[in-house]
Image 1 (spheres, helix red, strand yellow):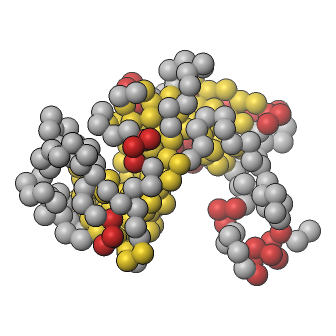
Image 2: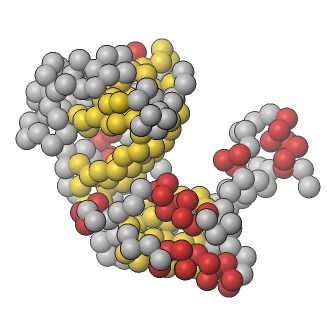
Length: 260
């Protein structure tokens, strides 16, 4: 297990009784990659320390038949550690959809955890770009975020753009799952900028990596850190946090769903 990438994940889980708690405890304790967990039935909260991707932990909890939503992510290093920042980017393209979550684990270590569907199989360049302008798709995102005027390079290179995050690999079904930590990226510096996934593999040679145009992108938005989101139901129409993922934000379907 990559101990430097262990994070604390906070989920809201639709638990209603002690039996629910026992079921969640059982699936979590049965996984060797779960370092620790705490469950609070009164506020329907499950907190997990792990190096697993957030989606894997969510699926593990939901294997009990209950619904789970990630509401906070942060460092697992000490219960009194001040939140250092968290962000989320909801990836969109013509046929691409996904989510990337970022959390500042320490002052010098940022966690990047994502899952993206709809990509062509193979490698794709992943970069933080300077601007968060999506008015013309990914075209307005500008160049790689490079505040120190460095050369382009691989994510693990000694010299690189701050925004150089290397390549992600999509499987034959078009899904890319990735989770890694980075020593250059700082969450507080990239809020409002963008994440771009490119059509080709980054070769780390030219200034843009010869990775082609962006096929999907997202603005990096601030998100809740640990224990900062107590929401369980939408105050406007009473739809639960677990059902929101299945219901449109507006329109007839949402209106019908919210009616008693």
